[in-house]
Image (cartoon, rainbow, N blue to C red; front, side, top):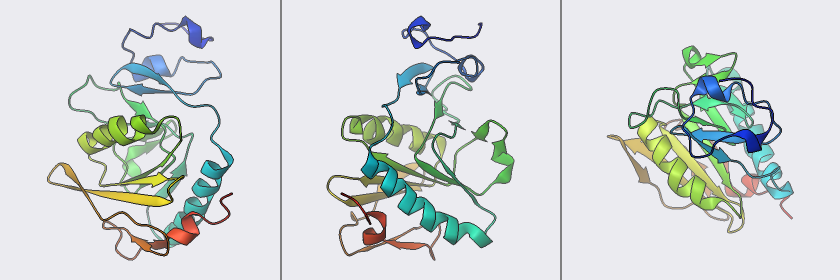
Length: 196
């Protein structure tokens, strides 16, 4: 395959690999889901950016003295999906934490991060709730946070025996406590600070 400079030149019925993905040189952001192109939303909203910054600020402070690394979108994560061909799933989570430095290379992360956070956009929540939930579960992401920007709740799922188990939703005035990082606690009020 040669370099693709216009999104319109892609055949959306065709399956692509990570090698193909690296040849995409157009403006639109895309993810590769089991080989198929998923066009991402335009730039995230102001509230989405604020929530991402709030969580990122907390994560950076918490992991400052740890061996884990924190990354924010756009950051390519190549997931190992057993039900798909090798190197056919590339996602860009809003935030992710990776503790195994061997998974990191110059292109991003090659393997499942330990924790992924997705902030739901109003127009694309099915992709994050359904598609990504299943991808993250299958690839072995240990903890997955879904941040609902409108209702101001956070859903936390932890991987147990290959399946996600959901905790009670965290709402206003409550503290989110990670199961895989037990000393990591962030208040819902911090997550949603400065939201308009």
